Image 1 (cartoon, one colour):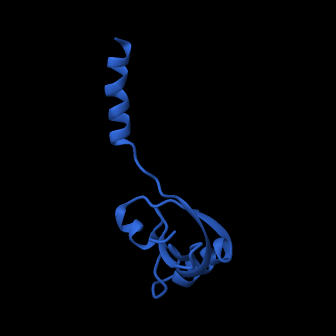
Image 2 (cartoon, helix red, strand yellow):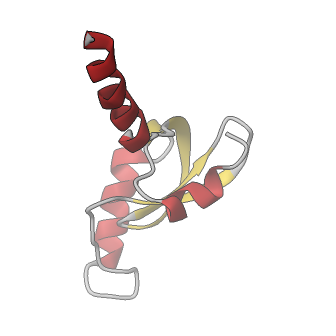
Length: 95
C-alpha cells in the first residue's frame, strides 16, 4: 500500500526535475563586462553571457572599465558553467 503512494511522488519528481548540464572550461576571452568566451574540453569556443549581470558595452560610458574588471577576475582561469536556459545550451554541443 505504501509503495502505491510513493510511486506517483517519485514520478512527479523525475518529471519536473531540472536537468543541469554544468561543465568546467577555461576563460580564453572577454567580450565585455558581462560576456566571456570559454574553451571546452573538446576545444570548442563557447560565448557565455553571465546570468544576472548587466554591464555597459565597450562603446558605452565605463564599458572599458567593466570589461577590464571582468578580465581581471576570470581571464585565463577555470570556471564552472551552468546554463540556465536552452539558448545557452546551443553552444555546448561536444562538451
